[in-house]
Image (cartoon, rainbow, N blue to C red; front, side, top):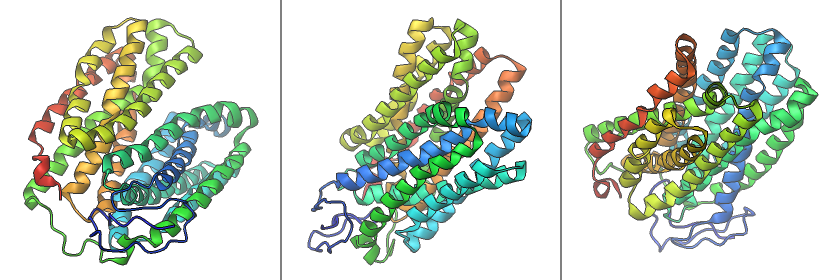
Length: 419
């Protein structure tokens, strides 16, 4: 097999540079400008398995609460432990691997997740649960920056499409976690978590093969980020990154309101059963997956700033209408909101990578970590708001978050950002 020869870590490689032979078993032939779909498919499947295992932990909180007689505060501490290790370490690890690529760190990261699952399956105390959660968080912090780099390396220049395919795997995996918990873990108990280790082993095998391809890629054989300069002055780059993070804040705070509390909202407002409310949540998650796939390639064609603008601010009319809609129109609005708002992240991430050339890992870690952190903080803040007011008021307030998309107007001209 030949490896891709047209991209390094965010930098085009001259066509004259021949691609070395790779021992990776992807079965794809990469040429200049060709997207390597087997590699993108493999990294997306790995992302699906990774996020499935992580969302599974959140889904078994009721079981853990009963088994260990935990308070809601202790449940929150488990979430905090996971979120801290999964978010704060990502930009640090990404920055390190920008300078010192570690092709097989993907499999190592999945090994941390495997150890966390096995420990949680036999945990007999609350401190052991915290250690297990931290191991899973560490696995996530290692996986996401390097996996995002692999997606860019295999993109053939279609960076938005590659990031979308990578991220839709994670979205699909996150939706599988609650189902796996309901069908496998809850009926069979805490020890059945060890059965999910099979998924981690499968992911480690896939990631080892990806690591072999990554190792032989021309990007690893060149000086990483050597002599690269941003197209914009440092002050403008910092301002642009800050604006992008504000947009990520608005997106993930709103998504958290849906992911964490939609079922409670529908049960309270429309007296739905738990099962019917879960169906509505899965409809929304399916719309999010569709939006994730759409956003990347559309950004490649019409420009990332346009996608960012439409996907954040464009959701505002629908989020503002949601608290006042009946059940039928709530379902319609949820689908529209999911598709529109989910299309933003791929465009935001690739735009940020182009702002800071040669720092794919650091940028990916920064934005994935920030998104994770906002999700965790958002769940806690909105939960407290719901406790002090009511769940309908939460949606009335969150409806205004997409209006922050107006700041996309202040992002630099994409032509000045691209290299």
